[in-house]
Image (cartoon, rainbow, N blue to C red; front, side, top):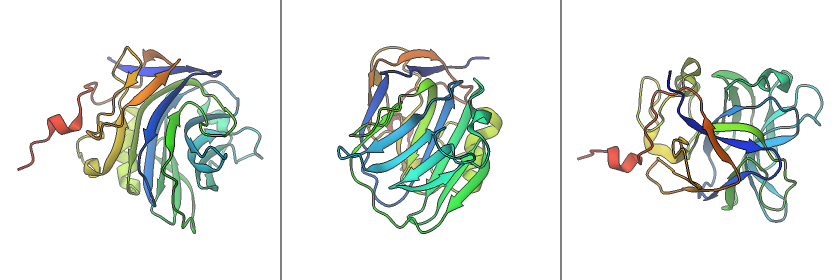
Length: 238
């Protein structure tokens, strides 16, 4: 089967700058990752120059048992309840964090993991990165592969999360399908089918292309589509 492409990060200095995405008080982040490293590492992260967390998804083995895979919004956090080693097995996994302006939820491989209410916060409009902390934070460089990463300016439903995970075959987020109906709410979608070069194309139609520094092209997760064209060129509204 065709597996498409992904980006490989070496854990020491590879990263992608996705720029400013303009998110304010709600979001969903979905990303596919593949690692067998047990280091502290961030998959996606947005941090101010003063080292204030905006949002991130990361592994943190320095936390107490059960708090080792984290989704963070302005330092409100939800944690995976089982050891992060379940997700560092060299296989592809999907993490999705949703936030409706108050309640945060974490899903891994389509399964609801945990939630936290009362995260009534506003985001900074600062850059988002793949593969390291960014801003003024510690580096936490990611050692592994990242593919099929998307951000929406709404909180997706549990049914949409299940649809996106699609039993391990990444659903193309550009088109509504089954229980997934939020394609119009995409802020950025990086399918990572560029396969060469240092630009990571945003296929959402919003032109939030990423700048690749060091990360190299490799084989990706199985997906329902390997087409890398922008959403706007596929729409026929009228």
